[in-house]
Structures are given as C-alpha cells and as structure tokens.
Image (cartoon, rainbow, N blue to C red; front, side, top):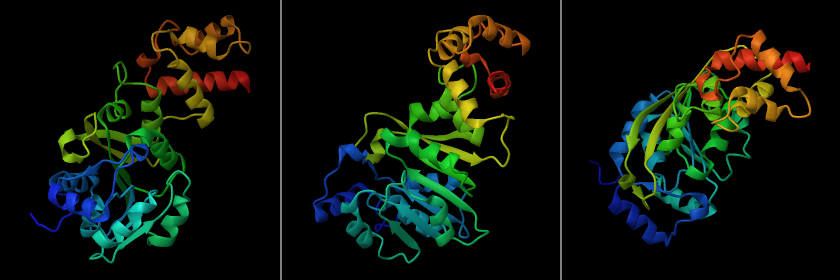
Length: 292
C-alpha cells in the first residue's frame, strides 16, 4: 500500500497533530482511515477516468484523494473553514480537485456542475456523509433533478437499510418511497466502526443510488404523493383508514375516505408498510382528484 495515502491511522494522526485539528461533534466528523474501504467505495461507484465526481464533506481529503486518482475531476463541498488550509496541503499533489467552501444544503449544485464539468461528462456523487444530516442532503440532491448518474454514500447502516427496504419489512417507510421514487437503491457493503476516527457509535453501510430516467409510477402531483405516503406511515401500527382519517381531519369525513379506498380496491384495514409504490400512487392520485 502506498504510504502516502491519507487514509491510514498513522497519516491521519500526523495531519491532525500538525494542524492541531479537533473534531466538531456538531458537524458529525468521522474520518475514514482505511484505504481498502475507500477503494471499495470507488469500485461500487462505478467511476472511471472520464467521470466527474462531486464529494460532500471531504474532511482531510482521504476519499477526495482516491477520487482524484480514479476520476477526471473532483469538486468537493466543505462547510468547515478550518479544513481548507489542511486540504490545500494534503491534496497539493493533485491538479484535478476543486474545494468549495459552502454548505451543500445552500449550494446551487446545477451551477457548480455547469461551471466545472463537460456537457456530456458522466457525473457521480460520492461521499462519506455526516449521519445527522444524511436525509436532508440526499433529498435535496434528488429533488433538484441533477444530471448525475449515481450517488454512492457511506451512511448509518440503519438509514441505508430504510432507503433500500422492500414492502412488508420493518425498515420500509415513507423515506423508502421517497428515495426509490427517484432512484434504484441498494446497500452494496457494510462497514465496521473501526475504520473511522473517531469511531462512531453505529455501524455504517455504503448505499448506492442509481438515478432513474423515468419515475417508476405515475403521480398527478409529486408533493401531494409524498404527503399522502407520509400520512399513511404517521403511526405505523395504525391502519390506512385511521392514518388517513387523522390526516384529513376536518377536511374529508370517514365515509368519503372509506368510499375512496373501496373505489380503488385498497383495503382500509391494511397498514402503510404493506403497500408497494404502485399502490401508493393509485391511492394518492385518487385523493388528489377528490380534492381538486
């Protein structure tokens, strides 16, 4: 193994010591210290020397370095200003990296892509995401309809399982539907706590999201669809009928809700976790028509 790689316990400690860097819990900073895990992430991401890559939260540059070696260009968003001079040092050997000091949640990623990559270049997002903000980041990226082929991220195992879940499982929920409406989701690898510094309290997984060119179901209104899905999971143990009655309280009475469910052939005594995406789309479209 190349001694120069950032992702080793020794090198990471050296860099932290050199700059007197301390981890900020509020930013969910856990740095990867295993080059093999990074190579696996790169392999699963399916990037090559023609690809453009976007990283979120490069830290001291462990994953950034591997992305720079294996892809054409890397653009990384880093929110922590203390890391900018460190990254300038650790990544000084690579000409194909641009670090942007900005919060990804506030960034105009479309504009960044336009400015940094070729028009027909395949683009992939690859990141070790802070656990506390995984879902808002992924939902922002997906809902903006970015021209990216895939998103491969290291996230909390439990969240990865929820995003890639199948109906009738404990992990399946409104988050599953939201992620799988935009992408095909799969957990490609589980990762132990020991490959991070500091070690997190939870296990991690690498989740791969491949962008869909066409939505898997037809919905009359996306926002309405997601609102209905969330309503059906508001209290997991409750039936569809009860959750929808709570959601439409003061707007639609129970008889109307029951009639609507009957008209589309969905049993109101079922629970949200038993419906697949197709059934949710039929359900949401029926209530959308009723209200519009």
